[in-house]
Image (cartoon, rainbow, N blue to C red; front, side, top):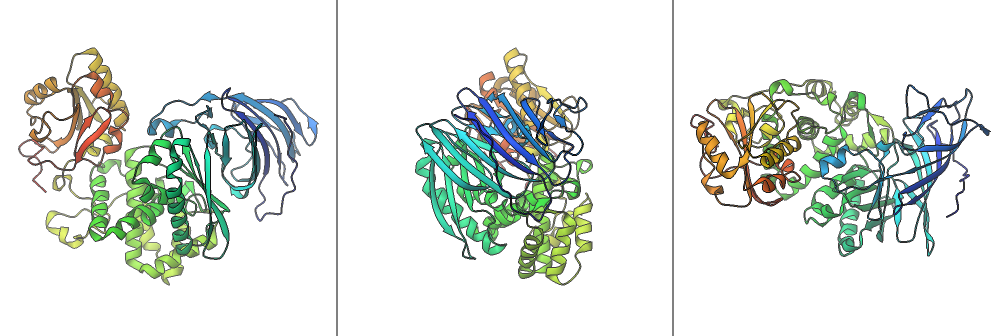
Length: 591
């Protein structure tokens, strides 16, 4: 394929941000990546960031060739001469292969990867020249025959020939990153007319075995786009895409969502996660959180998507979700609590409990406080005032204060800036019998759940086995499920071993035997309990080392459960409470 430079005419934008033009050539089979581009700004450019994984082969500043040298103090930063306002560059790399990863590993993966089954260049990999936090971009992507790809933004043109695939994309709003995806996609699309009359396109970019699901994903995506356009304001892009990934991702990006091919097959995804990711085009990818003052977007999205769908099922389902939020919070040790203003992203279990669950409950309490109509006016006002701009918790306070006609400063100060929450005693629970207030419930009043151990700051790991393979599998599993870095002490205990050694260890340490309801089931069993002094523990009992190793991918996702039965890596049974007590005498009362 030929290699040329794009020269484009840029419109006038409200924001004085750098403009980036890129032409990308990617061969997933060989993993060869090549790019040429122009970076320009009306102000001087001091330099740009580009990952050390990419080799700059040509660099010009204001039309003059300069040596492509990186600043030593920052290995990914290229310095530019004073007065530079236009940069031309060419760069290349051989990308890393796409690996088989689980969800946690995907979240930690920052490298740009490629393979015929799927290529992903996340913004965090630093694969494009970046001169500022926000910028506009236009990008042309060229791929070999049999491959298609995209980046966030509006699809301006598309060509597929025997020689390959070529598409041009435009992101006319201030962008904070570029994610690139490619794969052996079969594309399906349907038109959609938004409430204000503007027509857009809804697309699926699916691996071939998923094409039978395309129609359902198109219909449900259109339904969510209409729902949130009516609630908040029109969807801001010309296209929305659902894109399949070879790894178990669940990412929401401007104008698209990137979902693992196995995730897409799950029957409940269209009724839950899809709507959540569509909504992120308004909150998170349409109005940007002010990271310095806290990420409010995950909580607002959880409230308007996940919780709203439960409300539509009925009050029982909604109440169960609220109880689940408070149950998770009860598992957070008081000293490990954090304020909403300190939440930025979900990097461990406690952050998830606060940034998603607490924030969602705070928006529920705010709606209860000001009423449904005022709450919806606040959403629309926030969107109108902050569309494609940064918004802080303070900006949300201003919007909802204006919408309700009274100051909400005290409410936001209490629930956003403070880490603590009220605690009700047993005889005070009637004050909030519907569980609509964020508060700390004594864990003794609730069934034990795995999360009490999984998110504990310190956990004592006990491997009740001397077999070397079992010990290796147990240590690997503990590293996967525990947030704690210190596994040598603390009140919480994780006990792992084979069935025969686990039963003997429990008897020797005055803990209840394996629950009768789980005996003989599956290849492995997991249950939570509390000892006589109320300290939490989790027991993982497997048939052999292989049965324990098989839990590494699935078990981290079941922190809300009290017990599970696994057959290989699949959870065949799960629940919160089993018949009979799972705790030692003197532990929690039945609930």
